[in-house]
Length: 296
Image (cartoon, rainbow, N blue to C red; front, top):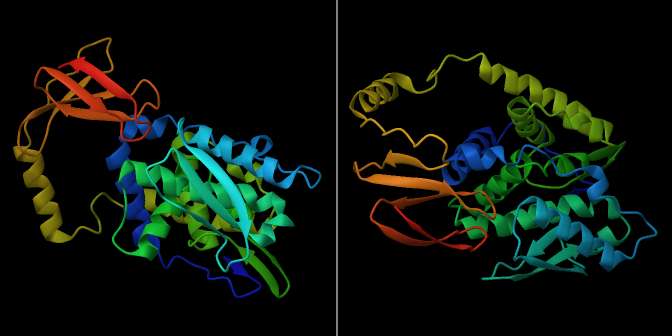
């Protein structure tokens, strides 16, 4: 959290951001990502100065938990004098303790942004999705928060007034704008109408320009000769996937070893669950902990 200090600009973490989006699709599947087509709405996380501080923070936390479909996760929100904007204690659940910086007592409209980042930590923890270093993991968290519909709050918390500045998260404003633009191009959603910060709107426009540049690049342009040859070889020798049964949401695909696996959506959170084809299967959704039994 930058508070009064200089705000970093540009795209210094762009490679990690792109890797984070790729990791999100690989872990969740395309179908699950598509269920996040609607972002968190401003009315759902609005926080009036006359609202009770703790009750209001709990209400906003519940709304963000609902958005990320964590039905058995309960956020207990407190306030503490500390350097960072917020912190969450990652445990087995279902209760998670979130501490917010004391400055949010008087900057209540940014509480939703801070809680979105911390709830995403819980979401990724349950998915067992992480990057090696702490900084890369924080970039993954910001990217996932933004791409799955709550990160516009983080960009809207970026403000500069003369020498004073404020920014939440580890991405630069332009990188937040880039991820928001990537999301907007996929879901045909315009988050700029929700911004209250003019600097956030400018960063979003710059990010959109960069995102559109990506679409103008030829496929595998950055892969190099060896990467393109490897891709062509993998396509040539990949086993054909049997078609899924019409009228069902089950899909049958071979894994890297050629063994057949079946994937189907969790009835609670819609995450795709992938298990071997081997008769009666009992599986637990890693996200919402729902236990499923089916015949494969």
